[in-house]
Length: 152
Ligand code: ATP
Ligand code: MG
Image: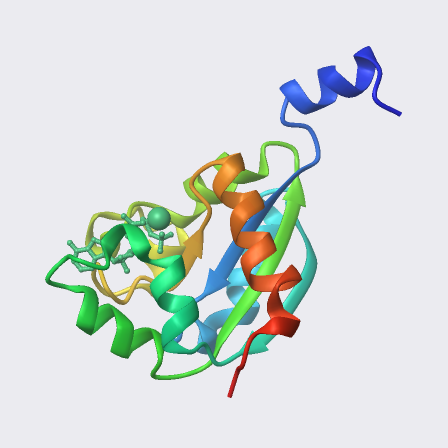
């Protein structure tokens, strides 16, 4: 029921949902990554192993599609399976981003997922939504629209 208490919960980011994707280079360490997610007080609501196609990648990475590194990013992301996830918990969007570390794995702290399992800016083990709005769009893209898409 949408009352004042509900509005308070939403404003406080309590029990928020975010979207994560374990990239091809993170898969072999997925158990350790899941342990880190749970140790941060977050929970996995849904997950799926998939092989992405070029179209969904173009949509997901629309903000970097014109960058010189895009072809390398695309071939890396198509090189193996990924695991898509819906993650929940208080402040889930920013907690997951903190746990991931910065884009460049070389600059990431040793207690972060990218610091432990990533290699550089392309091979950085995990994606996480950067805002609540992106989380909503990405959950829709990867879980709710999925039936309409062709995957291989
Ligand atoms: P993600 O969106 O994957 O969680 P991010 O939010 O840290 O990562 P973005 O700026 O959204 O980074 O870039 C999307 C992805 O593009 C990065 O995860 C990375 O794989 C790649 N990327 C970004 N900047 C560079 C770069 N300078 N060189 C190579 N790859 C890059
Ligand atoms: Mg991003």
